[in-house]
Every structure is written in C-alpha cells, then in structure tokens.
Length: 160
Image (cartoon, rainbow, N blue to C red):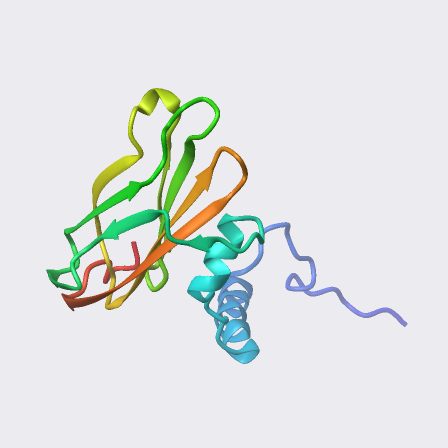
C-alpha cells in the first residue's frame, strides 16, 4: 500500500514563515526559563582585568565627583605615583564602571615616554555606581582605586 505524497511533505531548503516565527519565539523564551544572567561584581571585573591578581590599594588618585547631575558627561582624573622610567613605569590604566551596559570604559596605554602617569577624560555613567581605576605597573604589580558616584540623570539608557 502506498500513500500519496502531499506537496507539504516535500520541503524545500528554506524554512517556512511558521518555522521562523516558532524558532524566534523559542529563542525569546529559552533565556527567560534559564533565569536572569548573573551580573559581574566590581571585584569580578577587576580580577578579570588583572588576570586574577589581587591589586593593592593606594599609589594612585582617582578624582571624580561624588554627585553628578548628568551621567552623559562625568569628568575623571587619574594620577599614579610613578617615576615613569624604563625600570619603573605604568603600563596601562583601566577604567571600570560596574553598572554600565559595557563596564570596561577605557584602557589607556602608557610608557616611559609618556613622562607622567596622569590621565584626564570624560565618562558616561548609566546610573549611580562605583567607578574603579586599575593600574598595571611594569614590574607586574597592580593597584586599584575606587570611588562611589551618585548620578541624578542617567546616561546609557538605550543600552549603548
């Protein structure tokens, strides 16, 4: 006995509209079933930047206002106590804002030719949070400074 083959059973390579909608709906539902993703803490972010090495506190100054009216433009200044010679200098300064959509704000590379380990820039902050500056010295040491910032008008509302 043979059954007639319907045109529906002979599928082409392209998925139907129904298949695409079903797959899209499954993609939206599955992450919610798994639960919310665990956000990295500031300590986790600092450990990731330093490859697991615990940074020392001190040796640098992080100047940032404790209260900012607008998170779209937050002035920050980082100064590191370093002679900036070939033997002892700052390799990089990394800025982290833990509650931003992209917490790694900047990495500034320095060398002995930089003269001074002093950086000033402007950040965007999504909300009130703690900002950290992590410094890598040429001898393999790391240092960190943190500062809490209260933001009245948040930036980064659109996720970017």
